[in-house]
Image (cartoon, rainbow, N blue to C red; front, side, top):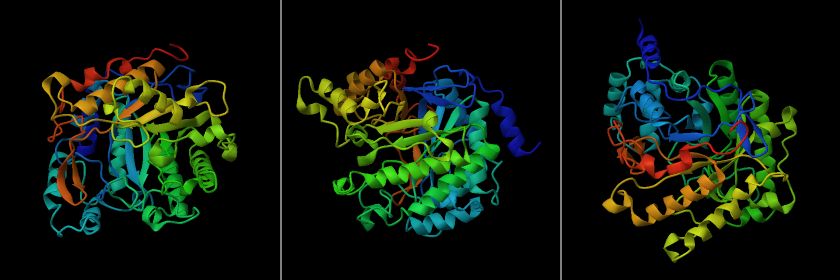
Length: 428
């Protein structure tokens, strides 16, 4: 029995607590539904695979099956798996070949990631030096599917690296006007669309666990410049990207984020809808996307005083949440695909969270419960192979601890309250 066969056999023995889904998924009004028309509520964890190695994080700490067991037994039904355009356009890149590229990109000494490489092979013997990186992602996706966990692939960056700020070159289309290298020097628009098309075709051919594609993470122009043409570049290129994905994989959801770091869909209320008629039409596959953190600039600071939680919930609705209003040209499911908190360092009576994060999480939870909205927490992992030049870097927002063994904060799951429940929608 090969190591890969052994892995897949072990995955069939996992305690499966999640419902199976009738695929494909679609969108109708403000809901995501399965092939039988029943509501599917996304309750996801973000699994990063977009940094310099292009590998899914954590395989140096645990076997893949252990990480998937954590997801399955914790109640998550999906993973938002991030990737780079670099990888999408380099399908032949092998496990061994990715490390020299990674250390060069991260400005590290040549041997800096050797212990990481050795540990991955030790914990996951189904990976060999010649295994293509894309095949590693494929095995992960298939293993998630075997555990009844869906995958939504997210094009996080063009150049494989940490995200996000206004100088990382990954933020806005290089074909936009005016072109500002600080936010667009790596975001080659045609390459981005080619990468989306390639990943959609690859998934359709052999990975049925992939049910959707995020067109781009946290689009961000220099503030105000995107408004010079009423966000015409957003409309042009998100339409083209959606058409490309739908043509390559007609059964997949198409996830569309707004401007200003994935927080702002307000332009939809100005009378112009996103054209989804191309490639045979993908209105019935469209899902809107929003991000929300305690530090998100568009949302008010909860330290403002009494009543500020109500103000924050109004802001969530005003910037993006309005798309949940039914019967409008912009109506669609809204997936809050990223939110998160620092898991430790706060007072015991605050569940270990800092006071600001505790207030923010409680307010966001209320808003998500009231709207029964889909969500995805950042992040699954307890560390990164390399992040911003730091090797084996700890992730304080991680669900898992530094060793990827168990909950970093065992109280966090309970803090999400009714977010786990499905209370509205078709078939509920």
